[in-house]
Image (tube, rainbow over all chains, first blue to last red; front, side, top):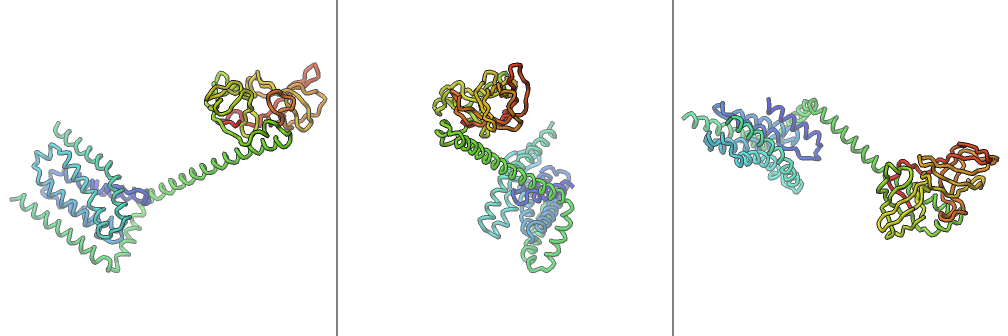
Length: 155
Length: 255
């Protein structure tokens, strides 16, 4: 439900900005955040297919060609699953800020980069760079929420 | 062992999703149904997106209104300055004014202090000796006389307003050429004193500085007669003047 809401908020903000501002990938921040805090389930298949579905819907709404963001979203989820899986549960609980930041940044870096790499063009790179700038506050907020959760669980 | 199986499953699902995404990317441009799916999805999303569209239109409308307002304000300021200059030019033409003739351009000063205790008496402006301001220099707003410089220092000056109770200058009613004295009452009212009762002075007649003044040159527009206030036993009437300049709303003045 959280992911659906985040997807809709991201879509809402994109419509509101009318292309004048690059909206951060809130949906992928939500997926990565849920992967961080998801300790109960046996696997992370939900994340893979949520990312896939979210990507396809985003492509159909904003790109017109399904696959661009879908590919990026799935790549991000696989990277996060693998890297996060390498950290022992005790290490995750201690909340390594740098790693959390890097993984959240990857979620904002990879999806918009793939269309630019595939399609090319200076305008695409400008769009990509601006999105990275606008993403930073969203990444910091997500990181803050995660670290606060880790600390409160410790107490 | 379980962990390995989970990892394997994750890899299988992940790679499947990747292959599907690549497949879609590769073949979607050739699929005829893709456009209609995009259209249908767009139509569905138009419902949750509707508030964003409305908010965006409101925002754009507000921004456009704000921009128009700014441009109108700039236009009003430009026209006001032009109007002020034309009024002074008119005064120059009608009275052969010595002062106005020497002024090639209307210069502007900012009002930096208008103390509540002396609200109707004086203002401080941000121009002084270094800007060639001299004592007695007339001060205008919107092309009308609002006072004269009473005190000058290097970088600022004080100007006495026409509403000040100590402000008294000879003036003329332009339509009748009747001479009198324009004076303030210290409470925001400007008066025209010493007009013989028998003269046909009516509201709306223009008042400007008279040629017999020692300090101010003649022909500077002051305002219009608003109405008679009192008639003295000595046979002279006092009239209230509507100053041409709005004395409550000036932030800058001309000199």
